[in-house]
Image 1 (tube, rainbow, N blue to C red):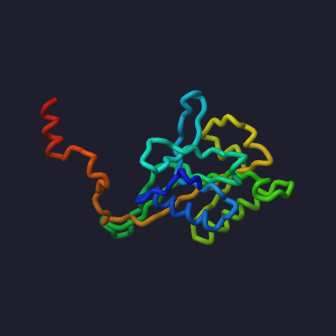
Image 2 (cartoon, rainbow, N blue to C red):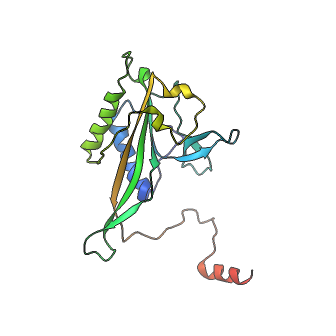
Length: 210
């Protein structure tokens, strides 16, 4: 992972589930050099037709780190896309106190085959099977796999179209990540006491003045 992209310090909900899977991929797939978390779609300021996946840098700046492929520096990258709204499934007989979240995501993987292993042929199927092996090992369910590299970046408009052709490869795996609902979550706490915000009573007073 790029040094400028730090893990979220206190991930919750979707980010907590994804960050756990990112750690699993990083620790079990040595060829996957750039495993990213959840990306957002960013529009290029210079060319509004160009859209690309990006991830917040988590270093107190407002800037995003792109999650674009780089043939010079990357062997492989992965990222997660949101694939719908998160839903909670309540346990039978539970009055909305116990249940599990369901977070639908896409795991997208791009590979620079010669940098991984210079075999002279397309072995992307073996890499996809390796990812599925790890998911199965950690009991992360899946039921479909798309080996079409154009599907990896179908939400975006890339400038370098050559990165979608051999010797590059890619695949996408839809997943539904689950986690238990925490009915005893602690209230949000500010970490920076210098940041000021209006308390509820002060806010009501403010509204009465406008």
